[in-house]
Length: 254
Image (cartoon, rainbow, N blue to C red; front, side, top):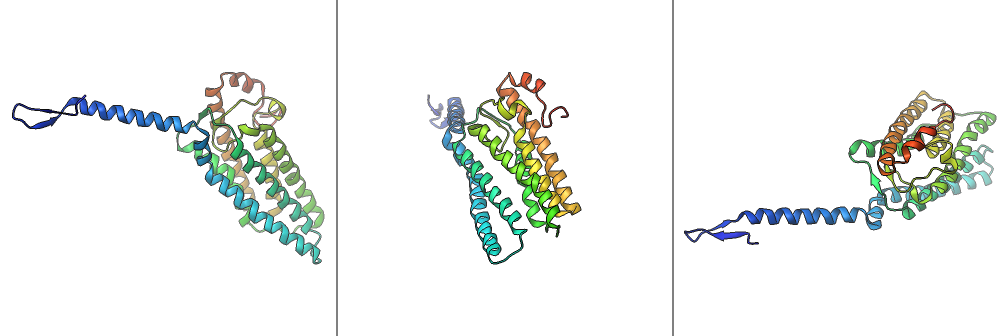
């Protein structure tokens, strides 16, 4: 197929086949890109910002735990134990999520558009805002009470994340359908556990801003759930029946 042909006057002009050739080359390149997007290498590359974030979190919070432990050993307040436990659990859950990001399967389907990604990122990292809000000077007994949902929610988050295993994702994606274990009780047990922990953190601040942050983050998570369910429904036809018999977030209520 020639891109040019000679006219009667001897001048070269572009033949229609040249445009066809360009189109074919563009289609081939697009096919290569789409094929690459389905590889593990692409998935790892896409997860680099998240891996960096969780890796940085594990490192910095580990240093904070060491500092808190030293302060407690030097005669600090017994309340320091609560902070150590909370931060140590944060390191543990961050390490689990970091590992799952690296080991997860290649997605079978993904949500398209900006809004699903925005809801996923903001829903995941809005909780970081709590670190900029000062903690309230609570009595020891009240501090222990508010720590209970944090510890329970964080431990449950680790258990559910390990159960989800290589199907874990931050963005609305479908890898393999998980309907057993905690997912037989509700469709989004991981988010439920995270919200329990964040609610306890919000209580530790006792400020309107903390409750506003929690309400906004929870709203984003609800939006995120709907996008995830759309992807799962398109990838797994059996998800419709699963969703019909399984509550979204709270057994018997929602």
